[in-house]
Length: 216
Image 1 (cartoon, one colour):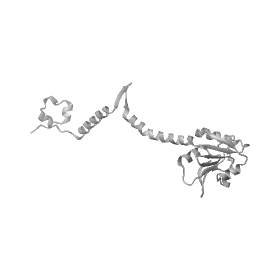
Image 2: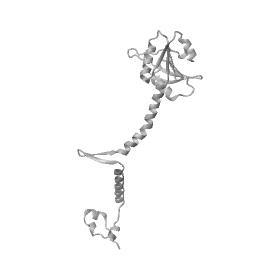
Image 3: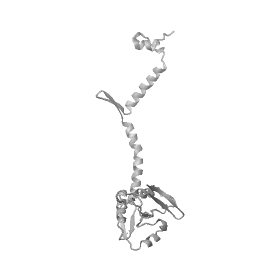
């Protein structure tokens, strides 16, 4: 019968491996922990071959995984492309603002949109803004000073650039445009000594109005 030898004895040096015959070596009892250690060793060799390596610097071991970095770059590419597409869509849209030539806050708001959306805005002065609003279907209860048309949507009043960008990105059904009724202090283009008042951006369409965003 083959002699069974414990792994502890071999590791402690009480029995040298040179004294074992092939028959004896084959009969060595492997414990589950030894199998796990062997498997981990194989994984380590596989990882080293796939790009994981160690570098010792000032006594510390640093792990570098080139394959992980490559995977992250591949996964991040679609996200960056999607963000770029949204930005390009906002920049590619045409922006035309109609305003009363005597209104100063309109130009302040237009500058806010230029900076916030990297957009070029064509400004058209009109002495009859009510006719412009009627033409573009701005509800009476949502009217403000200026009116802008961008990519088929109507933007009425001091709507923040972030909400315009969201509208162009999401394009919700049944929405013809956005409006900030009146001229609330603290809204874009209406800044006044850090004084602000709460206001809402209202989305309007042929059938109904709904709150698009709220600012306090």
